[in-house]
Image (cartoon, rainbow, N blue to C red; front, side):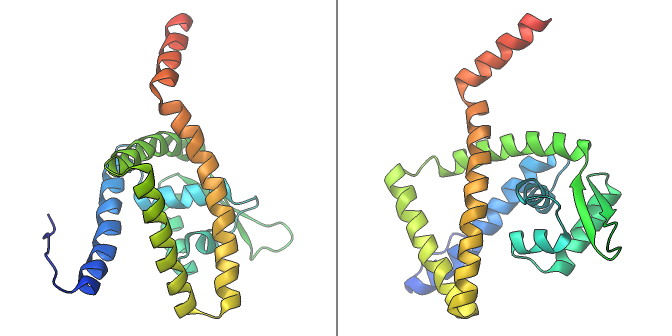
Length: 197
């Protein structure tokens, strides 16, 4: 378990927490997704494949996840071997590869996403809606500052626009999982199952 530091210097405290929290959330996600045969990175690739307009290329996934194409290619290689992703060559340009999720991946993704959504709700439970809005605003400020540091305003603006589109798709998908995981939806689901038997 990581050490809980007390800081005199607020910048050091903020910096360590900015590194520590994503690492811990990722470890929690690995635990939850692992129960469904996925890792956090494999889940992220499947999410990208589902949310990017087809046909999906490895470069599209890399851009969506803000990772290098090489890193994504290595993840995809492992996913192909695990039977989670299928590669198809473009008929017009054999150098171009398209990605699709297999049926096995789709099933795992749906179950893992529902479990992941419950995890995120549990992690965020101590925060009020006001706290969550404040947290989002603060994180957006820090994200925008890092974009400014990394590139010109045009590049940062393009990344922000793409991120907004991706976030809108992601939130639409999360809303589906949220509605399935409410107590009422679970009761309805169990009623349907009992009537089919």
